[in-house]
Length: 183
Image (cartoon, rainbow, N blue to C red; front, side, top):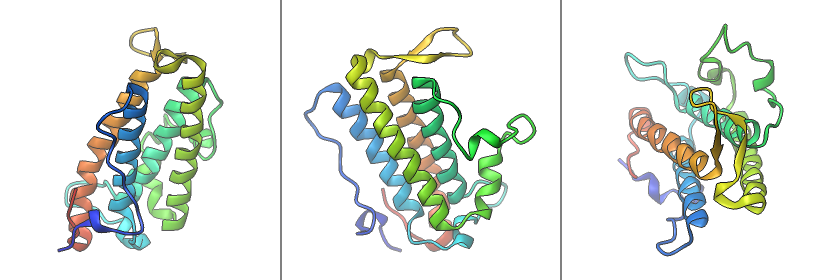
């Protein structure tokens, strides 16, 4: 077995030990983004589509799902932007797991490009919100449960949690694919 934290093609930087809150939150989110990329890097389309028994979850599905979350939380919820493609044309009521189900139809290059583009847009969305009001910047969209807006701080923490949870799934999936283990 190898350790994927030695992978030279996907650099991952530890978050700074002494930084302001906004820098720390963004750094932890970037760390988890890079971790997912590490788990999925260097694999074929077939390997990215491989599941574990009793689950339909795949590494490719995780890449597509986190791309959806990047666009949704930072573009739509935070700034009120319109749904982007490919998400805008999906009938989510009829197919609520569309991103997971369709990831096997995408090449590794398409999955990484989709994820990279969403992360790039999210970084710009975060910078815009930080410049506009810092971590207290309020979202354009209300929470469905609380009927109030989110702070940028809350969204960043939620996305860190989202990646951390899915990176645990990615650990298991990657080890099942080729035995690679690591952080």
